[in-house]
Image (cartoon, rainbow, N blue to C red):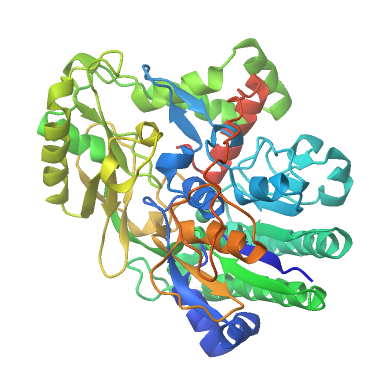
Amino acid sequence: MNKKVVVIGWDGGTRQVVEEGITKGYLPTLKYLTQVGSYTNLKSTTPPATIPAWTSCFTGVNPGKHGYFDFAHLVSGTYSLKFTNSTYRKFSAVWNWLTKYGSNSIVIGVPGTYPPENISGIMVAGFDSPLSGKMTPERVHPRDLYQTVKKWSYGNINESVKRKHWHDETILNLLKRLNEKEEIVLQLLERCDWDLFITVFNESDTVSHHYWMFWDESSPRYIKSNYKDAIPLIYKKLDEILAKILKITEKKDVIFLVVSDHGFQPADKIAVHINNWLLYKGYLKYSSTNDFSIKIRDALLRFFSPAVASKIFYSYKHYAEKLESIIRFSGIDWNRTVAYSEELDYFPSIRINLKNREPMGIVPEEDYYEFVSHLCKELISIPYVKNAHFRESIYAGPYVDNAPDIILELSGENRSRASVLRARGGPIFEEITPNRYFGARGKGLNGQHHPEGILFISEKVDATEVKITDIAPTIASILKIPVPPLDGKPLMGEIIIDNEYQELLQEEESLSPYEEWLILRQMKELGYWQ
Ligand SMILES: [Zn+2]
């Protein structure tokens, strides 16, 4: 009997929580995995953001090779953003390798997999899919499986606006979602034919963003509260699902992996406004402010029903992208700006306004490297900036240019991290007052991504310094599937390298204006758009 592999993703699964759970006894299945197999921390991508990290996990290469850095990307030669989707991924994933050799994969809920691919097996797209909270047949391959998976839900929690009882309702909602997902996962595991089964649960990420300050006593925002059990409750439920998965597959020769794309850490009380620092240093100039666009966008997202808003957006192709581009970039006086930031909290970074690359670039190409290196040195002298990386020092491959020029890593008091919040003028640092500690998407979350995730594997392996790119080669080595040359290394066995592997690049598929609007609304609710 050939070996099979099950990969269970706990989005944002964190070392401190699983270690507490194993010690206190509320994560018995993980404890069992440490006894029969191995447990280690897992180094995420830089920055540890969900899309590039999961994509690196299942392709085995760094974002410079797969090119899928974020939910949106700057169209080269413009100051315009375009929403991305799975067709922007430039490197094959483990399910493509299996398909090539006639093996079946079941892939459920992996971020960055919409539109789903025509793989051998089943693919149900992840949470960045363009429908808020609802599964649709377009998100499912093959489509006739839709009825079975239609209860798999994502963005049905508004993370931007916190009304009364938000924390009580959200935890119940997350548990309900997990119950529904459990049913789907167990059904597919039992009924379908598979060699590789992958599923990612994002409830562990959501709960950590919003309840970290109640759980982690080292958080500068720590508050003693009844919500202390929220994070353990979600992990406990995930552990129970894991136990059932193990039970259902016990007659098969299966190797299990529990993986997270990044961990969590507390958010500091401090917010950093990167553009205000660039302004103060004279690297950035504004010609006017454009709060009006932000107000229009927020009003549209808040007050119109999806049906009405979709009609508006049908009439204006790419309106959502344009609006977002305006919000991030308008008012910047490009003729006098050499560097600017999109001020994304989950992807802190800086772009250079380079001549012959940006439409109104002013930094001469011959000065580029020297200026970037000068700016990086200045940046690391700012409080709360732990590191400033030139993109070529952390990524390698043909798509490094898709990344911002400088990637920042932030620090804070104890284990915490300062937030990056958007501002137009004013102080560089802002102390977040206690009434804003809970945070919300776009206003600074109380739990922040950390570059260290977790890995449990049901085999004894010599696992130290494991990187997220090691997961795909590990799966390939267990299943004995040939792979293209990868950055990662298998944790056990050897991989068969297929040097002739032809990447079948998908044509980048633009979404319809309606789909774009739905993504924007979804992202706004999840808070990725500020
Ligand atoms: Zn994540």
